[in-house]
Length: 75
Image (cartoon, rainbow, N blue to C red; front, side):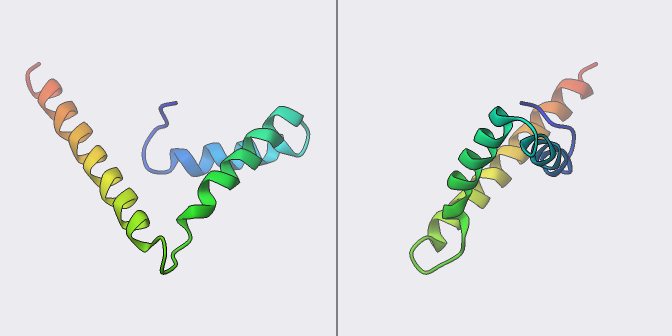
């Protein structure tokens, strides 16, 4: 799901949190999201996993930025 800018994910999660108070399907999505995010807690066992995820996200955003700049600079 594409979200605009770096603030898109928090806004989407805030909206889903509000929906989860009323709708069962939104509550299920929030519970699944919480389970998947629990491993991001920084501890001795998963510090390298956390660093790898952050590095991967940075690489992803830089790659997308380069591709977008090259596409729009050719026009």
